[in-house]
Structures are given as structure tokens and as C-alpha cells.
Length: 319
Ligand code: DON
Image (cartoon, rainbow, N blue to C red; front, side, top):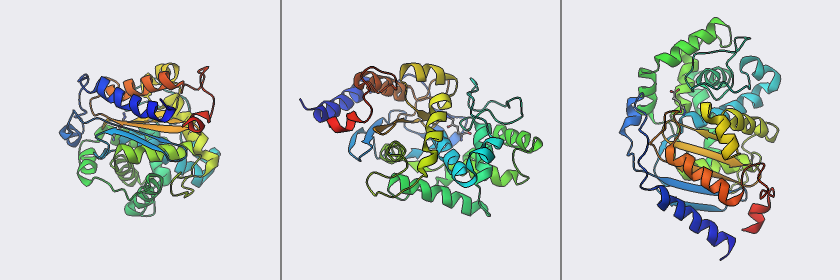
């Protein structure tokens, strides 16, 4: 069997292997997310030269949630550079849950992947008006996905209506002058970013754009500044899975980000990306089936950064 046929078969096999795994629960702290069909399950892999392999509910849309965070961080770096951006947010893993109300010793958020850091970043990239900053963000993600994306206004309203913990984090940041006094505007930017609708194909194309150092492999649009892609990927590797980040780096060994709607995006530098959607989450807020699929794929194909089987970009050449 060719490597290509093996890969297609293997992804279908993984879908079959975990289809009947019903562990975990939907996120209900944002009431709109509780309406998802818990059985939905889609897997897409896209290589850094644009070849796609999909199985399951890959057209099903869901909100990107925290997977927006590394992309927003990248946009802040493009706009302000490293020094200024890192005055507002650190790059150390916190070992804490995503919604932890905690700052580092210099009263900055630990990293851009926890909510505090993501709100600081949202404040940096918000536009002159609440609409313009959100539009810029959605436009950029659309270029990376290769199709026009949009915000789910019901989820955004639900986030905002129940977002008092995020509101308290934002005011704590205001107290330490990490964000400016347009606190509601920054929160609107953050809630909207989390509410962008994607399916696994969109997410995997966004990941393939990162794997291809910022250029969409199909449209050849230069979506992200290649100088900062590594910044986003490194915080994904060290902080992307919250209090599971250490174990993820050890077991899977590739940059990744999860979202509470049930998405996981994993990126193998210069090679490929994997997007999984399955809304049942573990206690840390990560998709149960998503973790299993990524772990098995990394093992089978030696994707871990330090696996003796990992030969850099040879994975694509073999297909
Ligand atoms: O801040 C929140 O509550 C959400 N909108 C985003 C959280 C999220 O996706 C955490 N990730 N697992």
C-alpha cells in the first residue's frame, strides 16, 4: 500500500476506533455551546503543500474558541513587534486552567493562551471601532482558511452574557495598566474572536498556513508574517493545552491549541496540520477524542518533534 493510501486508511481507522467513545461532557458554562450534538466527530489533515484528508463531520461548523488565541497573538506581534507585545503578555506556561485569575510577578498575564493573556492581546489588536477590529480578525482568518468566515452572534452574545469571570480578569488587567481603559471594547474583541465559526477543513487549512510559514498552500496568499509564525507555534507547544501542556508536549510533541467548543488544532512545522472536532471535553477543557486522535497520529507517523522517525519535511515528500 502507498503511504498516501495508508494515511487515508489510518485516519478512517482512527475515526472508527474512537467513534463510540462517549467520555467527557459538553461545555455548558456558555449556554449556547451546550446545544452542540455531542456525537459529531470530524478529522481533517492538510499537508503544508495543500493535500487534504478528511473523515466524518468535517463540514459541521463550531466556534473556534481558544484556538483564536495563537492567531491573535501573531497579529499583535505583526502590529507591535516582540518587545512591545511582550510588555503586555508573558510566554511562560502557567500550569493553571484557561480561566485562571492569576498574573505573573510583574503583573502581566502568564501567556497569550490563557484568558488573561488573550484579553491583553485582544486589547492590542482591537480596532478604532468595535466592528473594525473584529472584521480585521475575521478577514485574516478567512484568508488563512481560504473561504469567508463569520462570527456566530448567538454564541458571542452567550459568551458576553455569562462572561463575568472574563470581565473580572479584564478589570484586573486594567488595574495593572496591561490594557487601556476601553475594557468593554477589548472584551467585545475577545468574545467575538472566540465566536468565529469554522469546520475542521477551515481549521486544518489555517494550521497548514502556519505549517507553511504563513502562506496559504492553496491560494498562495501570504496571510501571516513569516517572522512571527514561530512565536505562535512555540507558545502553542508550551502553553496551548493549559494544565495538560506538559503531558501533551511529552506524548504528542507538536504545537497545538484546543477550544471549549471541541476543536483541537495541531501543527507539524513545515509538514502538516491536523484538526479534530468532537465536543465532549475532559476536565481540563480539551476534546477527549481530539487528544486521542492526535496522540495516535503522532505515534503512528513519528510526528513528535523529537521522535527518531521524524525526518522534517520528508513526510510530504513521501506522499
Ligand atoms: O473565555 C472563554 O471562556 C471562552 N470563550 C474561550 C475558552 C476556551 O476555549 C478555553 N479552551 N479550552
